Figure 1 (spheres, rainbow, N blue to C red):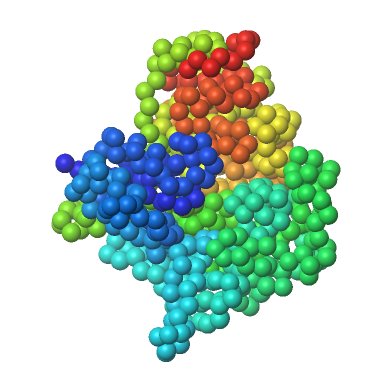
Figure 2: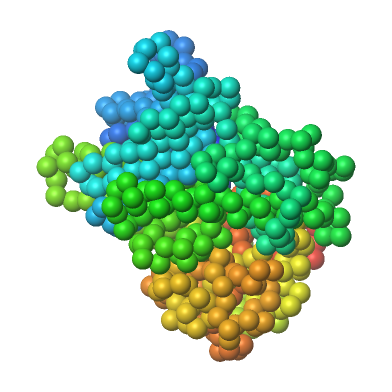
Length: 577
């Protein structure tokens, strides 16, 4: 019998991961199950796994532990849930080691034998620090950036940056603590200033290329120390941070910033240029941390995780700045990915304790969601749809005629990127494509879209800076000269595109569809965005897919495994499901 480790992240981006004898078998984000964006407390995800797999060990991760205890037994709710089904399951709590979970995920997923791990996070676990020889001189601060030296024998933190409100500043050989704003908190402050909210940093990244250097905006960080300037950035640990507009009149907000989210004529130079500023300064700051990690460890293999790892603009910058390094970016770098890290780590620890000869499998796919079996009869259950027979040739033609087609197949993707199983597809050559699809999805006008390219043509169309492939869509890359002007719907204002490469082995139906589109258009690329509407999680199951079709102006829903295309009938929506 396999040894099955279930690990959960209870906080935002709540998730559950199952590793069976070192193999990542299943990963579920709670928001996909509940349809509540960033949902925590992954009970539905846990139940899906508990119903289908034996559980030998439960790891409860997250930035803190549940304070509430259940009556009678005094257990936390997660332990009680697993114990009621598997009373012999071992339970471990890892609440004070949030960054460890990020480091484990990045290292074990990378396939490297040794590496330096860099975790760049907004706010991890709160940790006690002793800042003098007196044991009573102890403060608590939130970890924000950590450098690790990693091998299968030992994953050890070497340097940690932490912060909290109103704490004394001190520095030791292994840590630095003060009350300033660090990298991700600065990004959160700008995101909130722009009206997106702390956690929507991806929108700030999308706006940044519209800005430029602005002498009216001061530096956000001190160049000598890399610490945030408290004359500009106000910390609010453990929440986000804010911009001190009282000290910077140029940044005073005179109206609701959400007014320009839908109307580009109302966006201010201050908003665009501040987004540009925080992108430039933070990527340079993280680049400096990469240099520090190399100096401390002597490693040429670098793995990166924590929320900043999802900054695909910065990731491409790192490829340019450090061409000599082997850099792996964890594709599930947000907090949800810590469940993968903890599950892999404890599975590996079990193998060592039992003298089993295996290591954890490096990441080879992100199609890790639940397995669903659908038939044509399941589609026919929805009375307000029409079903027709199609193949990749007819769907490619439909897309080439400037139609939006959603595609639903197989297991959902782990992490925030749609990779062809829960995707909305369109013609990348349409000059009006970006505005059209943003309107249909209910997204802001400035947000860019991604492209998926056949791997064998990737370097003809995109400058991957030495990479053979980018299957997890982790880089916003420059276009090759032949592609400039050819892909207007997915080319951002700065001339880049967030790109995914795909092979027949990785996703046959998606590969075949792009190949047929290539025959029609001489373009081996499809416009790809997540199958959801603005503010919603990616669709998870068949019911979600049909609901999104009903709730939007998307006209076509393709099921490649069934060879079927679904459209809505011209009748009022029925509630029968």
